[in-house]
Image (cartoon, rainbow, N blue to C red; front, side):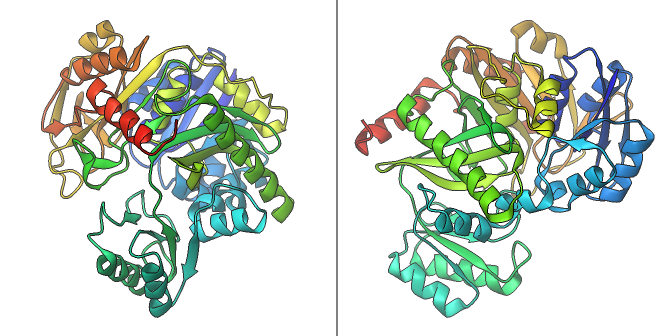
Length: 448
């Protein structure tokens, strides 16, 4: 048996755990910040174990991993990577399929990522500036005539970025928020990244990387705004969908290939800059524009909810992929996926994302969910005496699969009804009407 360590406890990690445990020769050991009932069940089923503790404490994670004879690890969340947990595990002699702290900087330092693209001539980078002085930031915003994106440099749980015309009313609102970022050190540093606002549709491209070779996953579109019709405040992601051919309804194969080329150049640039190899999952968030794919940001881990879409369709053995990533022997075609579409909808507590109603019991008809062909991944919930309760963040990811996006959407929507309690979700994600609007929008931008 092979002992595998997973660090993290969200729905993304539940999806990783589920994919890993398809290999019957793997025992799952999970170091979690909170007890995820789905991951706990997989630990028990595989004859592994779990421990609740500080997932950002590299020494404690490594100590426990050594005591359990772990041979391969996958630390997952962004804060864990920034804390250097991978570095601590590797110092202890445990191989990892995730980036060391310096490599994960491509996510936790947005200024670093932009400078890397600029300095090594990687295309797809919008006009940007990095500022520490309020007056200079305000001047740059005015030069863009208010068409700007304001980004704290550091991690903010996916909720710190604000876009003019979406979260910010006008030019003055953008200037005020940039000042707030600097004064309050939002993201952990008195620095702000300002970028030109891109027009188009977003998409996510994820890849497994051993530092030289990328093995790509199907494209996914995530929806971060809280309410139906792409309205409301930012969230960690209300749901996502993928298409049966690995593309999206508004993305051509040529456009996808261009995005892949950008990601290949980024890991090559990172090695030139640092003499290190980028080993781990690389997540590229792109905006498809008139000019083609433009980079919004890079993440150093799976997306959440996007991990649920792709890992649920993975035909290849995830443990073997992770082994090849850690040893530098990954092949471009090592990750193979089912030719199916997927739709994920997040069930979230009432009041989310402003002020969630917590500690509410959920009644889950797992039999009905299985019968429909849907799956669920537990996120911010806890279990007490056999009952699942809500916490403050997203509760459960519900996934449907089918020959088309619309077939998958109906399955996911039906499965959402199998969970009762003080929760809600965005019903429009993956629907025909919603996606058609996106296609028409891109036609209007002369993409075709």
